[in-house]
Length: 219
Image 1 (cartoon, rainbow, N blue to C red):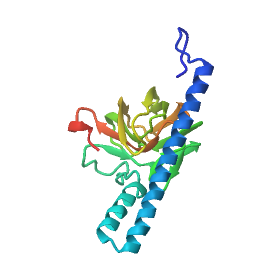
Image 2 (cartoon, rainbow, N blue to C red):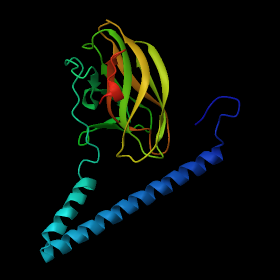
Image 3 (cartoon, rainbow, N blue to C red):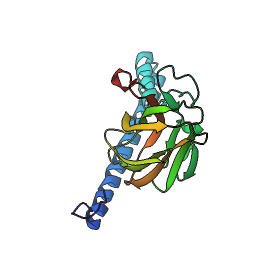
Image 4 (cartoon, rainbow, N blue to C red):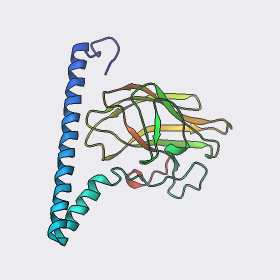
């Protein structure tokens, strides 16, 4: 990650090497996944022809596991709905988008966090007060980067660290922010810096009243 003076800046040659390695690993993982899917399809055809129902059902279940919704976010409530769980949940579909950030309608995720772009939600229906802001997202082992958040002029930057597989749900608590009574208040996320595979795929943003976080962070 590029930084200021004092030796924090990554040498250009090292960054190029890292990005090349990330691409090779990502391509290798994609090829392995495709090979596995092809083998399962072949088994399904064989078991169908042989009339082996038990084995066929097992293969179908595995195909469903890897091919069905690889990320299955629950439909979040829109801001203004009574926060029964204690949190307001900002859905991808409710955001105003700019730049490369876009909505994947099938998965219900905000994707494209690779180039300049942002997502913004109006908070007019959110009760004024102090809220812990949490991002629920997906991010692969060679993804991650830096994002800026702004709520009512309170702007901060935070890191998203890629880890695990893209299918794994992750969350990060950004901090506590004050939502004022101003009618045009909003929450805006803006891309600052991204690794080769992008920063993340955003599932939702949660605003939990300060001091009311449920055990384990809630969902």
